[in-house]
Image (cartoon, rainbow, N blue to C red; front, side, top):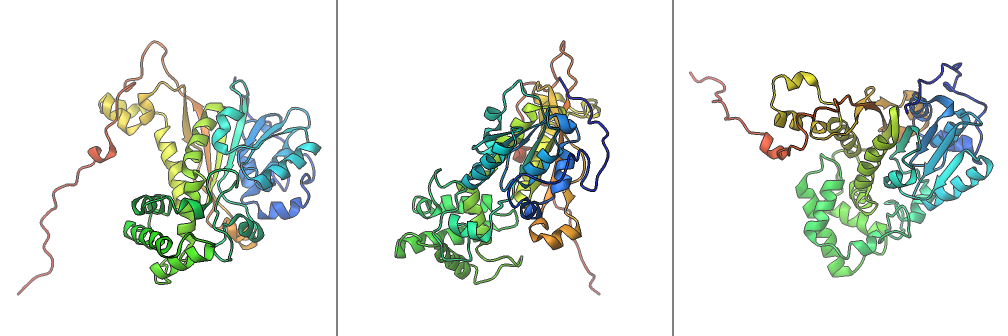
Length: 390
């Protein structure tokens, strides 16, 4: 059963569905100040269900988005399910749930969304904020900082998996190069990933395990000759890549997007705030792979080709994903107030019903798509002549 359109309620200076002043967590005004695209995200999230629906905040963090959602929810019908793997987030969420019984808390990664939300639960919106909301002090405690002499950890939850210092002792050069290249940014050349991997493994062979983050920083700095053509700290992308691998960030995002589309009601919104080019690329790829097939193409391409152009054509899923608008960026005022917002992009995805004739199978159902490499072919180069000679 789909929820109806959101009622048109009076618009306040903070947006629709305002039920009162901001409240909730201690220090909320400081938390809200750190929260990126707060009003834009909550406004888009609640477009389908309004104040009487159920929403899921998959990345509770410091509770900025969650507290604003609760402020806009109705006191009786509205409900918020919140998740996060971070122990600090768990402490804040439990404190908030004691004062507001509309909040249901789960100390789990957002990839577990399918297990947290029961099939019968109607969800009008799901929010994913992919930023790591750690203060400088928290970064030092967790071993995330590449500016301080702290143990090299990089895990969001210290009770899960191995710290980076131990994991680095278990990997080969090809494995480490793969992680650095795949989890860094798209523009980082593979050769640099291989050089860094060789240098890191050699450092461990000569000196032993990394005892602090600054040891790894020095290896990155010397390998890159202290330079980074994007103006970044020379160790930033290396730390980022190892952190993404240890916390399975790519896999978690893919599972969460798939689960959200399955649990949302038709018309429900999936809001994703990305900060890295790699994350934005994954979101765009998910949209393209789950768009409804364009019927105009069926008139002039084979069913096999239609399945390659629109992968959803090879399935019988009763729903599709559509992009509501271009990614939203923070205003100049917000980026001046909160520099973390500068690279942020807010993606608004919507679940829509897919019209399938129950008496007919989709034309591409069950067909196997060719690998992308087989769908591309380099053309023969044309003769090129430049200049003139007397």
